[in-house]
Image 1 (spheres, rainbow, N blue to C red):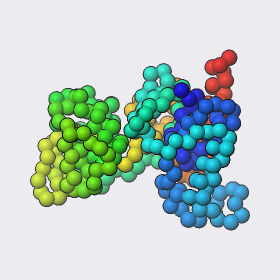
Image 2 (cartoon, rainbow, N blue to C red):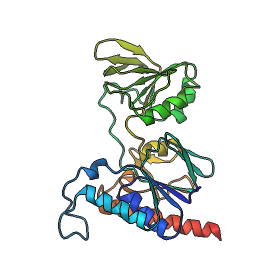
Image 3 (cartoon, rainbow, N blue to C red):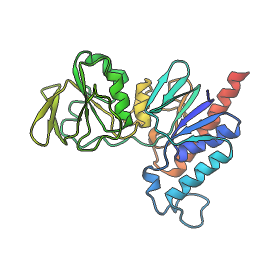
Image 4 (cartoon, rainbow, N blue to C red):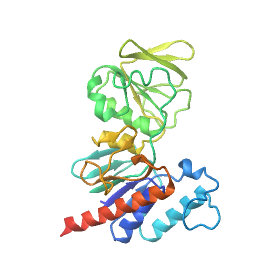
Length: 287
């Protein structure tokens, strides 16, 4: 078991890892280099660089720095998270545990531009299978997504629902979905219903009846994980105090996922505060 798990290989996550690892805490950092920062060619407004630096170079250097001070970087996607007094973070193949966790995977992903999605949120559309799966016992449900995150959500629903259908919205499946999950690759046109969700309509005009739709596109973000744990959120941001701690003991959040100024400098500052706060809490607990 690690001392702290950090989700996110960006400036916020790596900054937190620098402080926890240098304080000799066993630190695991999950994620893959990428995101919007990796696509930025010239960064000119970050302290310490006389010449512009690319986002990819900054990410690479940060990861190397974290490894040098002892942090263990795991280039894998976290697809599930649970809390039972300590945190359990699951990938497609393994589960890791730690008493402290930092959410630092950036800002909330954009929801698909699908007519009816916003209209049926809370009335058939959900973003958390663990939270809402209970309400769809013995009903037909669908999961929107094509990767490991969608597979994880569908597995949560499988013991409860009468039928689980994976909707890839025109994409090829990226995960190995078991035969008990139907996989529908046709592109979606809209959600249908009258007050509550009744189904989905494909671009060919046909419809699939469904009482619930669980959105699990791409990889899980910080707000997705926060909601699963009952963390207070403010719209698309995770709510934190001055120490970057959430309302769940031992759980911190840093960077774009907490809202405010969406800049590298703010993410690094958040990570530093979260990291030093965890070190302080860890040492106090050990006394």
